[in-house]
Amino acid sequence: MTPARVLVMGAGSAAAENLIQSLRRAEPSLVLIGCHEDRFVLKHSAADGRYLVPSPGAPDFMRRVAGLARTARIDLVIPTSDRYVLALSSGRRQVPGRLFLPAHRVVTLCQDKYALAAALRRRGLPTPITCRVTRLDAVEQIFARFGHPARLWCRPRTGTCARGGGAVSSPEQARSWIRLWETMQGVPISSFTLSQYLPGREILCQSVWQRGRLILINTFERLSYFGVDNIPSGVTSLSSLAKTVIEPDVVALCRRAIRAVAPRASGAFSVDVKEDERGRPYITEINA
Figure 1 (cartoon, rainbow, N blue to C red):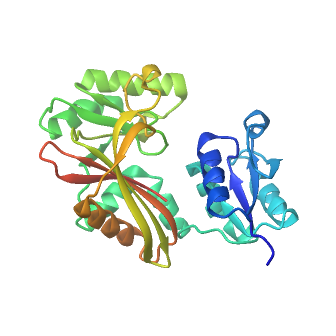
Figure 2 (cartoon, helix red, strand yellow):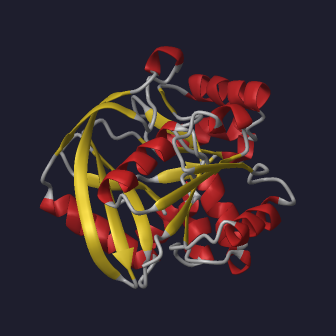
């Protein structure tokens, strides 16, 4: 039997190299090909073959990746970041071989945290109450709508690694935080949201699905964050320490949420869950 050939995107990054190592241990016969848009990152990859490709936002990204997949006789393409997922989802018809992604509407919904929260709440699933920030002078009204709480959670509606997210304790602090990200990182004011602050445990639920059937699921609690010394909010989506936990109620909630947005789900889904002060779980995002 001819060995299966797998293209791992983002090769050389920590996530992709972890995946490559795991695949190699699980099935040594696999031929693992890696690609990345940064030649210096790519150089660190342990893939059997390494290829430089354009950035996912580049006009010729899909053409180059599709050409690589044909030339390297790729059987399966695995994206390792939201940027790759979105680009491949949009151009999936161009890619030869398998690409286990949900429908494009599911991908775009999950990458918009505000739209996802609204969709889940309409289906009766618990998500933190969230308000859009349309302009800075409306922040005071949003705090009043929440009853002037001690803290609200401020973050953009798109992005990864908790980029731009942080707890704010007053309208003035919220405005300063949003203005900082707008001026320093070019994040538009209108992309920010303010939501209910959840002080409890953070539990992540990772799962693999095939045509609406759950194949594998596990849960772990994040105990500390990676690289927070250089992050004002003290929060990222990367764990420096976590522990496996058995949480049947969280698993049941995550299964309901995934089936709500993708009844015929295929691929990997990671759900972030945060508890309130009474230990009640809320879905904060789904990564497809």
